[in-house]
Structures are given as C-alpha cells and as structure tokens.
Length: 503
Image 1 (cartoon, rainbow, N blue to C red):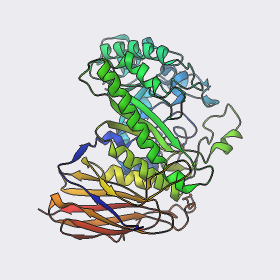
Image 2 (image 1 turned 30 degrees about the vertical axis):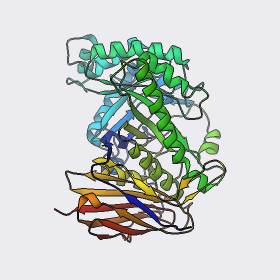
Image 3 (image 1 turned 90 degrees about the vertical axis):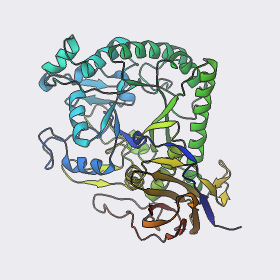
Image 4 (image 1 turned 120 degrees about the horizontal axis):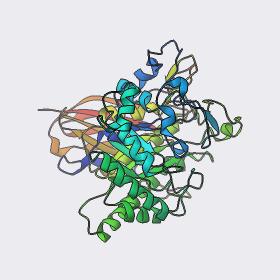
C-alpha cells in the first residue's frame, strides 16, 4: 500500500469564512488561571493593575479574539455582585464547583480591563445554576447600559463610566451535567434559558446568546438534550455550545490521535440536530455552533485528587503537555476549520495554567507548552476562507476507531494577504509521508515557509527549566512548482505550509 497522500483545493470550493473567534480561549476562576496566572500583583512583571506582562505578551502573540469568562462550572454558583465595587469590601466565598476559597479580588471590571490589554473581547457567562433571569438581566444592564439606571450608574460609581459593551453571552454552563451546581433537565433548562434570553435581549438587543449543548459526546442525553433545548430557545439564541476533552490514559497513541474523527462526528450530529429543529419550526435561520471548551485533559487527574480543599488558587488541572498532545490539538483545530460554515466560535480551555498552552510559576517565569504552537500557527495564519479539502490518504484502524486517515489536513485562503496556508498532521508514528497539494485554480504560488513541529519522543514536554525542549522550526521540505506543492511530512508531525499567490 502506498503511503503517499494528496490534497486538491480550489479557491471556488469554499467551506465558509473562518470567523476569527474560532481561535478563542477561556479563563475560569479555577486553579491558577486568574490568581497567579493572568493576575499576580507583586510579581516582578506585574503592571499597575496586577496583570502579569510576561503572560500578556504570550497571549498577545496568540492574537486571541475572544475569551470566555468566568466559567465553566464556577459560574453556576457565582454571584457577580461579589466581584465588583471596592475590593476591600468584597466577600470571600466557598467555591463549591472546585472546592476552593474564592477571594473575589478579581471580577467583571478587572476582567474587562485585562481584555483591553490582551486585545481580546469577552464571552461572558451568566449563572443559571443557583440564579436566573433576574440576575442575568441586571448583569447586562451593569455591563452594557450607558447610564441613567441603577446598575449602569453603579458601574459608573465603581469607576467605569463607559459601558463595557459585551456582545457575546453564555446562558449558563454544562447544565446537563449532574456535577453542575443547579443541574437541570433539558426541559427545565430550555424554559429557563429562553426566559433569560428574552430579558437579556430586552436590555440590550445587540447581544448574541449561546445556549448550553451537551457537556460531551458521551452524555446519555446526547443529542436529545440539544433537540429539547433548541425547541425552546431556537428563536431567541444564536449559538448552541459543544464541549469535548480527550486523553490518552491507556497510552494508545494511534487511538488518541484518531479522536478528532470522533470530534468531526460530534460536530456533524449537533448540526444535524439543529437543522431538524430548524425544519420543525419552519425557520429560515441556521443555528451556529460554538465549541467553547476543547482540549486535551487527563494528565492532572491523579494529582488533583490529592489536593486539600478550601485553598485559594491551588494548582488544579495543571496538565503538562507533550508532543503527542500538540498533534491532537492540531487535528482538533483542523476539525473546527472543516466546519467553518457552522462553527463560528471555539475556546481552547483554558488559557493559563489550567489545562493551558501557557504555564507560569508563582513569582517566577512563564513559558509555552507544546500545544501553544498549533494554536499560535492557526490563529495567526488561519484567517480567511476555509477550502474544501479533497484528501487521499492511506488509513489505519484501531479497536475503537476505523478508517483513520494518516493525513489530517485543510487549507485556508487569505485573499487580503494573497496567501494560502496548508495545515497538516501526519498521524503515522513510524514513517514520513510524501504529500502533494494541487492548487490548480490559484495559478503560480511561491513558498513563504514550511513550519514543522516534530520530536523523536512523543512524550517530550516543555518545562520552566527547558522551555524550548519542544518547539517548531521552519526547515520543512515543501517545494512549490507553479500551482503544485510537494513535501515530505515527518512522522508524527504538525505542519504549516505558507504560500504566496503570485500576482
């Protein structure tokens, strides 16, 4: 069997415009994401707000367009009022989702200050666990109403005369999960979500709303949950959410790297379910998707079990990522791009310290984990139109997943910059793979660079002592001849082939 792979792309065969918000992330009041992550007053690099500038620089390089906040499971027990106003008057609370103490020294206004410095927008979640429509409408009034009402004037009193104008809002978090504070049935959540959606949009008709989909594809209520929730909310929300994490606890790397095939199926099923409700309602609106939690998560499970409860910002969910994790992250990004017509937002969970591309030490340094690199490359070079990838590739089977192509790939056309970027993962663990890419409709192209993330050790990771142990190089083998590209993709590698379209 040939191990050669090929891809044909045509500039007129467009999947959809890539919404930049597909490269979003997530900051939850969990572990060291906020405290000693993005916010560490007293750190040598801290600015006047207490934000770590070394962390901000790494985030700014990622060009993160949107960040979900403040949770996550945390939001289902959060009173937003605890996190605004004079810091010295804020209450310490038992945080039941993660078993910690929440000091509330960082809240909505601090987050919005941080967003401005990070060059990103906020995706704000409201508490539909212990609270409901009343608190949600008050928060929208506090953040978005110009002035002349109780909550908008309270914001001004807190030092923020101008509204924050937060445009994207999540109606709760993972409400299908028994672990969730205030867990609800699909009927209960659907009713609450639609009534909350109505009053939030009455306060500010310009906002966009996200309804909670299933917490992961393995939930017993999936996809019936989506169908029931959308029956209630279809006319009042703009997105349905998806969440999914993958791990490799069995040390079965071929299966682990095939997980994005299941992610493809998850996305397809949610689209199908949404379209069923659209047909049932005789609606003209397509429901868009936001994959607002995705990543690899499993390394830290055993460590987290040993943590004492009721600490402030303990080291929770601190996965140390290795090379194979970066490969799956690359495949997952390609899965998102393959449905750019319907997946309009996505959030790598999370951004700093908590299952994150960026790690810090308290009072010390900040460094890039392996997964930082595919995220960086996609965000910076993956803007434009996602093109239909006609891929031919040898395949393999695992006990769990069959017909897995060794090549996972897509191309994005940036008309403004006159560039094409090919993202490609070679899943083969033993052999390199010859790849040919046919760009017949683009005329002549020239190579800008071929970036490769590869390592002989699949378990190799970056640490504070060795921050560059796993990092990409731009010595890839891609060669361009007119509109034809050939390259040898190294075994177990993430590849970014950047091309300039010749005028």
